[in-house]
Each structure stands twice: as structure tokens, then as C-alpha cells.
Image (cartoon, rainbow, N blue to C red):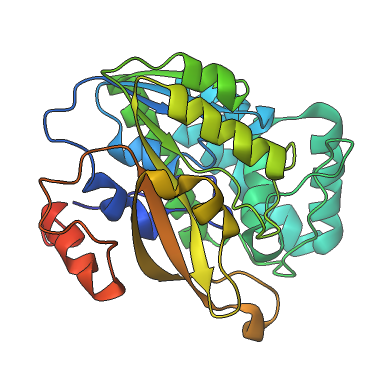
Length: 303
């Protein structure tokens, strides 16, 4: 299976974990794939079955993918836009990035959102308390080379094809409302901000949100798969023991290219928390890094 990268990218994107997540989806699954935190959409666009509900509280993410579903944004539109704005970026320099950022904060054009997500510092998507995008420029005036534009256009085309061939609904709403819609036939995939990891999120994330998420998933009749962090070299995620330990937990090490300083870019042990029965797997203990191969084989990594 080839994992396709979506046009919107950000720190913490789950591209390298899609196959691991896929391995937990029962082969007979035919319900609705539900995501309360769709983010970039990388998991949903790669793993959703015929029906999906993809939600987020960030209206700009939802607006962008809704515009694709309504054909207001097409591969051709994206190419023309990025070629024009990329040319201006090369001529004018970083001040053009900030003019696009100012325009986006006033008009909320989804194409400007795409531009910012691909030209911002360190691939960050961050908003201040007033809801204004505030990430600085990546300091690469030649960012939108012809090859890079074509890469993004191809990503838009892939997402467009997925949306056109499946029944996908996009909605800007809170995670509680989204989880409440799940039935016993559905799978809920949750990728919330990682508690205690200083992750940026449109509405913030704290102890209250984490506990509310735990309560919502615990009460849901649906099956759920939750991405979170387990530990790194310096500390552990205390909420694993405080909340999530009553469910099945599997782990593996993952390296995040996050942080402006190289010394801050460290491996972290990812965790998946799930209420899916793991008895069909060849193990019941938490997965160690070397056991990731079991998941890759089950997910058809070599196919």
C-alpha cells in the first residue's frame, strides 16, 4: 500500500504511521470512518472506507477540503495560484509571505491557507488567541519551484479523486458532538493534540479536554483508535496511567522532525490506545519497536 500525502501539511502529520493504524482496522469493516480531529486528513484519505465523517474545530481545514469537494479548488486552480504567488515570492521575498498572511487573516481564502501551510516556518500551523495565523516565513523565497508546485497539485488531485469516489462529509464541530454520532458499526480515529507536548491546536488542549475525550470514547458504542504519546527519553505521558490504561495500548518508537533546534528533535514512543479486540494478533503485550514489522506485514507494507 502506498501512503499518499495530502496537500495540507503540518507538524505531527501521521504519514509514517498510517500503515500501523491501518493494521488495526478489521478487514470486514464496512461502517463509517469517523475522525473528530481530521487535521491534515492524511489518515482519513488513506484509510477511510466508502463512508467517512471528517471533522475538526479548525474552520480553515474544513473550508479547504470542502472547497475541493465542491470543485471550487481543483488541481488546475491550485497550479495557477501557486505559480503566480510563488513567482511573486521569488521577486519580492518574504514580505510577500506576510502580505498573504495578512490577506488570509482578513479574508480566509482557502488557497491562501494552502500557501501558508507550505511556506511557513518548520511546517507549523498555529493561530493566536484571536484566531489569526501567526507562523513566520520559512525563509525560502524559491519555495514554490515548478517541481514543488507539481507535487502539491498531484496531492490535490489525489484528494479530489478520493472525495469524488467516496461519501465523505466534512464538518467543523467539537469532538464530543462527532463522537456522539458513532454507532457500533463505526470506527472513530482520534488524533488529538498530544497532552503535555506543547502542541498547537486551534482551540488549545489541556487536562479538561483530555478527560472529556476519555469520557466520550469510553461511552461510545463505536470502536476507537486513539493516537497519543507514551514516553520519550525525558518523561512519560502521565495520562496513560491516569486514564487510558484500561484499554489496549500498543507502542513503537517514532522520530519527529519537530523544533527549530536539532537537539530538540528527539525520538518519541508513540502509543495507540484502542478498544478493538487484539486477540487475533500474535501478541497481547504492548508492541515494542522491533515488533513494528508485525504491523507492517499485516498492513501489506511490502505490497
